[in-house]
Length: 479
Image (cartoon, rainbow, N blue to C red):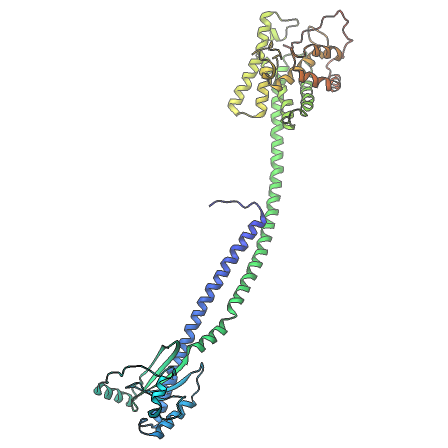
């Protein structure tokens, strides 16, 4: 599963939580396993101790020379005192039980011979009295003789250990057989006492494990925070370096692009030697108008204005397809020459359209294409090449149209002298709502001082005196 964590504290919290859950779960599992293992080890050890005790008692009783406990009171007292004096941990005790019928013969709680108290002792919950037991079947005499012979020869001792539940009590018992008495020596230790000791022993393990786990979580969390901080700092440095590198490369590409574009525009301009600094002035004029309009159109931002200024340089790129005999004619065009000259708008737009199809569409190429196609369209629909009108003419083309006419009026041409600002302004006002967008005329009037300053600064030739009233105004078309 793919996912992203965008905030550092969420990442750190997630890691710390995962660690805490895993460690705490591990502590509980380890505690359960250790508890079970310790219990098993202790029980096995207690059983082994009981077996060893049963062996030793069996050997001791046989060495005592005790005969018939059922008939000799002295023998019984001797064995009873021995049993009573033995002290075992976990409330442990030793007792002697008849191997045949399970009658209790000696027990630390007995004060009299079992023949007199057998019935009462059998009803007590001493942990080993086998009350309500049916009398076992008789042992084969040959087998008993063989067992006695085996024991008497000291080849081995019949000792066994087991855990038994009597009522609700659990006890660990080991038993040794005494052939001479036909009795079992049972060694008992209560499992409940052992459990209490195990619990006491294991009690600090879980809290200690949790404390260690939380300490590890805290330590690793601090470590993760430091690692993430260093990583973010390093990443920020790398990103900053990459951003600087990208900015440098972008600026270099932009400068290269601008230089190539402006070179193409200059190539077209160079065939018309009388235009002077026409492209530079057009770029400044359209920038001035676009900045003014940005207060009315939210989508006119810095990038749009920059693209518009650069794209305006390509407005006459189609002139490269016009023959020199027409383009450089020192007088006015006749009808056929004007028709050929007017094709430069469509040719320039088609050229930029072909570039867009090859490189892919972008804002700059779109503006360039709109300007090349429509910068000679008029607000009333009488322009060329498509005779569109009003808002159907792209705003970028409308802006360039006004700037182009103003610069043509203020520049020297083979057929006219440069015109003063006030006369150019008058002609533009006359073209309001016919040639020019009223919104653009309003913007021009608001910025006319800037237009005048630019035209004076970049004038190719000195501005001549104003025309007299009888002078004919040159036509608005810049062809």
